[in-house]
Figure: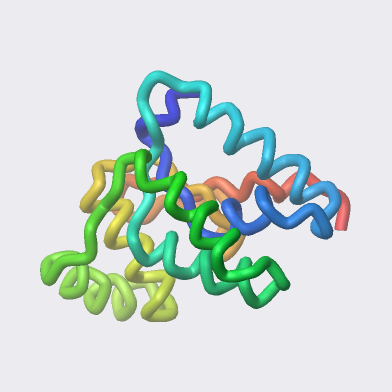
Length: 142
């Protein structure tokens, strides 16, 4: 697995840190661990880190602990929010009938040069402008 071409959505990171999620936690934790072990980090956006922090706090993690979790990810390949990503998100939202927040994640993945977007919020296997969506939980039992 060449992780430098991956882009993570927040749900994968949240599951990696939420032990109440059973099989999803186990799978996400293993995937994230493989990324930490890689010489080159995957891509992630500020929006994803923001969403991860909010979700972890909502799930009961205290603010300081959640902040520490997301700060650790700042050494990954960060795609910063910027005007060009915002503009592209508006276009992607219309072109693919996505929510604005999903379109923003896709726009950041495109801007970061990702080849795969790991998320359970997009259609597994679909290709958006050359980026293939992988739902790492697609094969887990319901």
